[in-house]
Every structure is written in structure tokens, then in C-alpha cells.
Image (cartoon, rainbow, N blue to C red):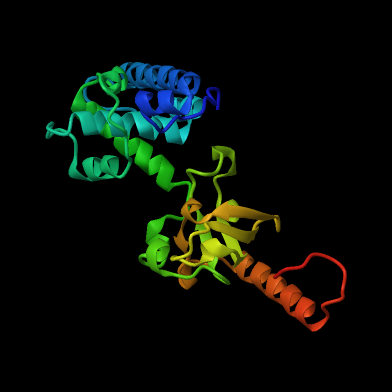
Length: 247
């Protein structure tokens, strides 16, 4: 990915209050550049009747999935009155919260013909789906508000990860303990192990999409869980043993 500018999620007013105007400006300029790249890609790949199937590829490669989705979602939200956007794309765009940012939101509204842009958005969604990432549909309902996370396999949100780490091995984490395991505790921290590489880290409860439904647990993750559970049992049976304490 050529443009790795941080995607700033807040408005200019909040950025000012946080002392982060530099981050906001850099991100805003990248949003505008991404918008222009989408327009250029459509000009190059639309022959007047059909949009080339690879039209979205170059934009995603340069600006990444997150920013491309941000610009597309902002555009469709700003043009919500336009019936030439499909219901599926409109519903998809609504899932991304774009802060009201005075007139700045209009700076990165894609100006391409809505019917053609609708096809571009569909291409983007197809490309994202092909990544095979876990999402809310793979998690137990209402996980964040009601479930205790301790001893569960959690799905880390792709918004937290760098796009270079977007894969199922990086997303799955086994929750050991921490105040954040409880949905009602004031503390939010959770100590967990990455099932992909075994690294133990701490994350905030809000960083997770939820608890993975058992039927979606890959075979490799089942094997890793067995290893973790075995190590924890050995630690309980022999508390004086050396090595990492699992719980």
C-alpha cells in the first residue's frame, strides 16, 4: 500500500480539542486524493456501458481497504437521496460512522456518475469479502453488552489491525483474564493470547467484535486452544514450574 497515512476518525473540531489537527489534515488530504483516484479509475475502466471488473483494484492497492471504504461510505451517505445507489450499498455505507465535519465531508464526495459508482462500491465489497475476515455475523449475538469473555475465543476488530495483518490468524484471541472480560466492570483491559502466533498482549474490550461462534473455529485454532489449555493445566498442577504463567 503506497499511502499509509493514518485514517483519522474524528471531526476537525474534535481534532482541534485533542491537539491533533496535523493528523486530521493529513488524513483529510489523503481522503481527497483517494476520492480523486476513484474518479480516475472509473474514467479509465468504464467504456460507456460496462465497468471493468478490476476497476477498484488499483485504488485499494494504493489507499487500502479502510480509506477506500471511508470515502465510498461518505459519498453514499452524502448522496443518500439518490436512488441509483443499490439498497445493499446504502445499507453497507450506513454501517460506517462518518462524523459530521462542517463542509469538509463534501471535499471527498466522489463525483462520478452514481450508477457507475454503485458498481465500483459493489466491486469493493466483493474484494473485501474475498479476504475471508471474521465479522459480527460470526460472533455470538450481543457479545459486547452481555457476555463474559474469560476463557472465550474473541474476534479482534480489523479496524484495530494494520491491513497487512488482516487474516484470521491475527484476528482470533484467547481471553485469559482482566477486568474487561466482564461486561459490567469499570476496567476494560483483557489479557489474551493470539492464536496465530502465541503472543500474549492486552487489548481493550471495545477492540473486539465479540465471542466467536463455535462452528466457525478453524481446525488450526482448535489445536492451538488444546495447547493453551494443556499449558494452563500444567501450571495449575505445578505452580512452581518455570516459564510463562498462563492464568
